[in-house]
Length: 263
Image (cartoon, rainbow, N blue to C red; front, side):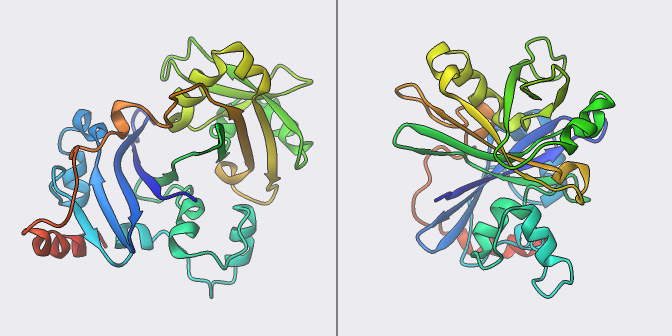
């Protein structure tokens, strides 16, 4: 069960994504803390949220910045959207957010889940990024993919934006279809850099949503064994600004009041 979600903001000029906060489900409440990913963004996080990046924010309800990302189940297209995300529709708000959060909002924000590691196996589900920016043949290659088809990961070591970038391609064609989301690239590069683990790793198609926008077109799963001591999302950008969080501070009432500004 996923209990950590991360908030990312996209720079519209560079198109680079920056992880800036973590939402945790714990003991019946939600906890929001900013991460060290905010340090390179100057005033952007505080301008967006009007919050102190060095404070902890707790609430019994899902915060508006997250809840607003969940479409009403009464919407005529809810069932279609849920199917694109491989959801049944009866999940909890938090579990729905692990998928609906993957749809970028008009505010240049998306929410993505921490990968699962169970019994030494890493498991991640993601939408392939960048399909519309790839070679003109990439979309036609996507058309022929079916659930269960295997894709091959490709380490794009000279990528000018992200040196950890991991692309995917079909087994029969060398044309790159798109990329694993940059948030997970460091994890996959660590795993795929070790030959025995790389041989065991698998990328498979879960859904091919031919009636969906490009960013929701190809839903895939990555599975692999991990080395001893491996920790998912072990980068500075994912570390909380508050290293040790315990209990509720005396200023919690003020923090909860500030949460109203996240609507």
